[in-house]
Length: 295
Image (cartoon, rainbow, N blue to C red; front, side, top):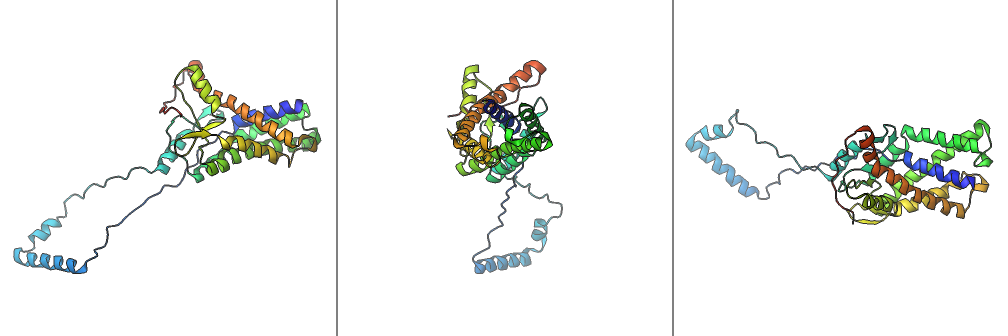
């Protein structure tokens, strides 16, 4: 029973520590040159006509066309690509932290944010996995487990702590990799939490809780959050490879996955309402959001 409580606490801390940060995607540029003339005879006739005109009227028209002081026409900037927009938005998310410590990079305050490319999803997940807070959280979880003698098969002492630390970090890394990168790419889902930020308390409460099983897709529609649920199951299954023998099994895997999925709702509530709490306590400005109600 203690072990089950420990695994739930570890998962909860892990999810709060493992929110992702920005990694920029590549900027795509397309440049098209003027089409080549497909009729060389027509080109020759035009050149001959220009030559005859120059011989009759002199060189002044040509000189007027080539006036050295004539300003060049202003270039029309190309509209930003979807990848450019996503990169700019991810740059803003890079600085988001709760209490200036806990990373909150995986939260978007723009409901209609540009979708992430597969590369951006993986790079965002990687950046979240190597955030310093992630290693500190793993150390705290390992220390708690050492004190409670959870996963007793690891033993005590430095060796036992090292095993618990490795397991805590591996749990987090597996959840990030599968739930925020691999499965979002396969199912075309956006791994970010899109804060509603407006409406009644209960509408925001229900929205935040629902995101653990209902998420935004890359095409802007909303549907089942396969990535989150399956990511928790796969991460729990992988943990059987390094947990002590008495802490393995199919039952514990699915029980842990269900616990982590439910705890994800608590994390979503924290992300949804933290700006309001911070505004009341510390008078910080509320983030500007572009609202687009989920369907």
